[in-house]
Amino acid sequence: MLKKGILFQGLPKKEGGDYRDITYLFLYGLSRNVLCRAKIRDMKREWREYLLEKADRSAYQAPVFWKMLKKEEKKCARIVLGLLEDLRNCEDVRAEKSWVCLRYLIRSGYRAEEEYLREKKEIFFSSLWELAGEEKGDILLRSSRICMCLLMAEEDHREIKADKGIFLFEEGIKKTEELWKNGEKTTTDSSFRDEKAEFLRVWIPFFFCLNKAPAGSARIGKKQTKVLT
Image (cartoon, rainbow, N blue to C red; front, side, top):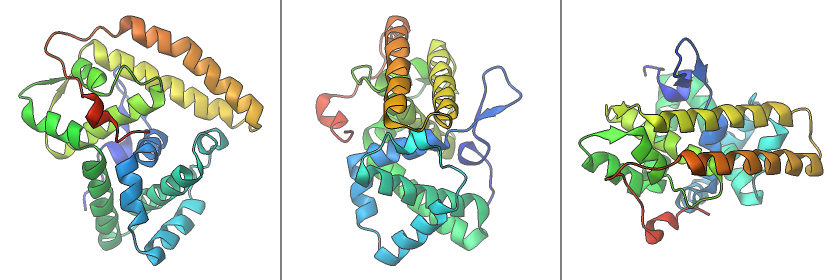
């Protein structure tokens, strides 16, 4: 398979020349999604154990990230990480199998987003930002949902038109990168809580003030947003 795109190179920075790694946001989104966790529980035990072993050998072991997740979420994130490791590093047959699994998880857990992308003739970043849910107090969760939209749009060859929403999203990505990096130096529970609390205290009001979506942008109803915990 052709190994290129967001899950391989990352997201291109708006200023160009480099990419942002979305691996942790990808793991965060799928592991926090109720429907995705249910699909992972349905995997064969041998397959799950193999993927957990792959995850244990991965370079993505930032303590601050793993401390964010509850027990089942952490296990699901490790299984998804195992799939990513096979996708990125294995030969075609195993990589293809991993991609089929990841694609199934994304499309199963983010059906409302998939439907929105399919129905809209033009898609703007601002509408995706609102689609991801301003009522959610978790910027990481919101940014991860944007990542899922971008992955589906990439596969479906849909263009996402840049506007002020891309600035909001990139600032969120930048701050999460700083959170992972700083967290490697502070591994105690109390220091982690302080780090995340400061991140949310500073950036949630910032995003709220700037986030005035244009008319006609999307909003998911309460019933649809229940897939996220």
